[in-house]
Length: 434
Image (cartoon, rainbow, N blue to C red; front, side, top):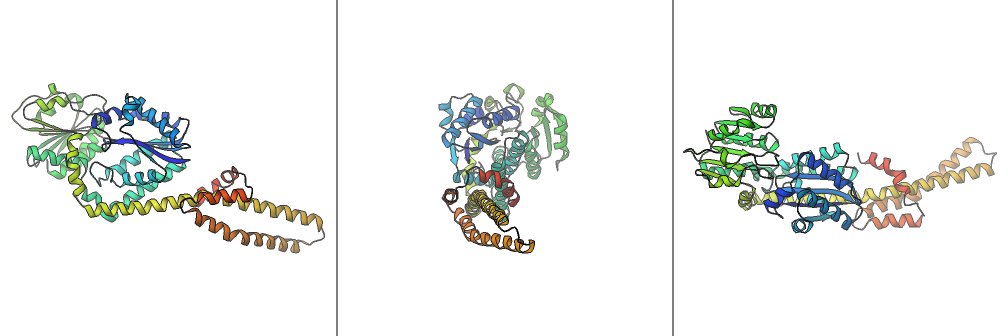
């Protein structure tokens, strides 16, 4: 079994395609199980954000896994397989690990270094764990990816060098509205992106924040945590709130439009609307309204190069950390892969020793217990010493690329049952890596 990543993001697909492919809520759970129930897939985890959808899977065959996952993504997006495939990227084995670590560090984000991706990966893992689609391999990969992301932020400060997507959006907003201090802001949605929007708006010095959400209780909780005056409203009161707002940030998980052009009435103030949802929340037709500016994910791509240019040393330092962590992870994985064979070899040797001691006991029944124990200890010590050097060496050799051939050689030389290592050693391995 090996790790495979199939996905698409702002780097590979236009927003129109990302909107079609986006999955949330019950649809995400359905896709998770559909992929996991595929013939060639053993484990599944899906990272779905405003600018990416990636399926991480443990598969038994590369081509079969890619085919299964691609077909599932196409069905859920409503696109044909040909339409979707031209935007998909695929990473396998070593490259899959490197990609996972790079994503966790924010290197693949629209705004390089943003730290929100760590929470999104954690959310994806918890969902997969709750749905029973993640096993040992993806558990280890995900936990290590989260650790690598935290290390990169702690050691390089790349999360400080790279602004958040909301932060970049507010920079664009300031270009239209001027100083945001004292402005009235409206945040639609109460998820993690909305929480980030509220805190970022507070730091920008806005005068008031209104939080609108389908579930009022969640909007109230978000408003109560604001550092500036904030209040919560229901979506049914959205039209009046739109009329009062200078700045609107919408980031819900709705499948249809949340704001239409006829909800925005003309007034003399300049207004800026920021749509961070996928699929989009705001009708593009609002661009035609006088005094109204709209920016979506496509528009924020223009800020990507600027974000890349911020803190180039930090970004390069993160790349070095990723390379180092990938090498360590793969080395440990290869060493762990040979461990079941080593345990099976030692188990077979122990069986041979027990059989010979039993035969000796039958041939020399007059041996007293003390002599019998001494002989048994000596034989076991000899076997342990003979096996020690080769088993230690095979673990060292197995940590290098191509090291699995040494496990194959052990199984062939000592006629070990290929199924025996998993049956014998699985609990031992899990215990040794905890």
